[in-house]
Image (tube, rainbow, N blue to C red; front, top):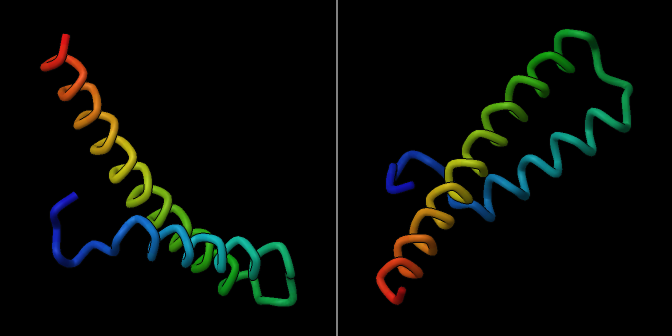
Length: 66
């Protein structure tokens, strides 16, 4: 992921953990819960993009060696 607007993996993971904590704690309105859920989905996609990119780089490096 090279999009400068996109958070780092660590930042996205930390924010996602906070979103999950808030959802699990409850005490928020349905609308707030939906907004948190949507943000969590966005953050999960960011994290998955970073992980997919890292895997592709590792696979390429292993193929070069092989």
